View: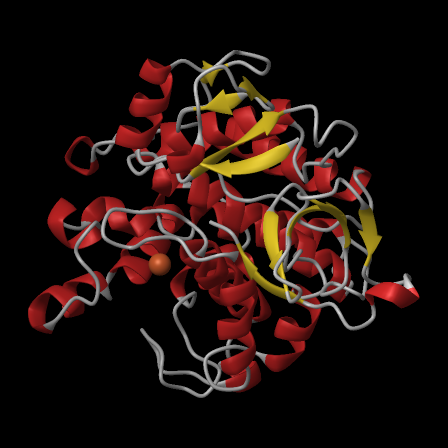
Length: 350
Ligand SMILES: [Fe+2]
């Protein structure tokens, strides 16, 4: 399986994974042969790229952090939650269903062991918020579990992560999806979403209070320059510090109108540069060990000018994966092969 940017897709390529819309419905099934019409639709919808199966990358498999079934269930729940109408005061989704979904996400990640997030984000513009919410819950639990949180704590963290931006439902749509950076009054209105979300959840569900403070404080900065409270360091609750970090990462690697996605390597560089100012340095250290800098299936440019597809990542050697050279088909182990010592990865081809 390999990742191909949408602009490089050609008809006849076989889809390597199931593709879902924002409500968890199957959009295109694995093994489907892409036609020109499918490709132009995917381009129109804002999909940055897709995984395809081809002869060259046969045997290169990617373990997804969430199983497709749990991912679908989580998307459906988040979609349901975001579909409520604030004026009608109707409860969008029952607490039992929400709890079951969060538990499934936590169990799925615990059961998959200490795995790395090795995939590029495959999502369209319109459904960004649903995929993003599920992704923030998923990444948060990966960090929390490495941090040593108990299962009940992981449950609370995941709930806060999946619900962190629900307050955007109360904003004017043009502000919620506005062109970044927002200025003046629009920016001030935007900054109300953590409080609005936390208040809505508190009045609708009976979660432990730590879930609501996680939502309320997910835009605080480690150095005190965030909002809404301006708290700093460990005065910011742990869940909020984790969500702040993974929220930022996931936003950067997601394709959105007027904000093109960046490769994981660039997003990780940003997190490292802002460690100690925007983000908790201990959490940055944990997170960068859970994220593949060069995800499996991605094409990279090597320092010798050749191109290669990442075949396998090694824990703690994230910059030196096993790669398959496009020009020769040779497998090159950048970690162990003495002949490859001088070769480095220059960039991800996107
Ligand atoms: Fe937010």
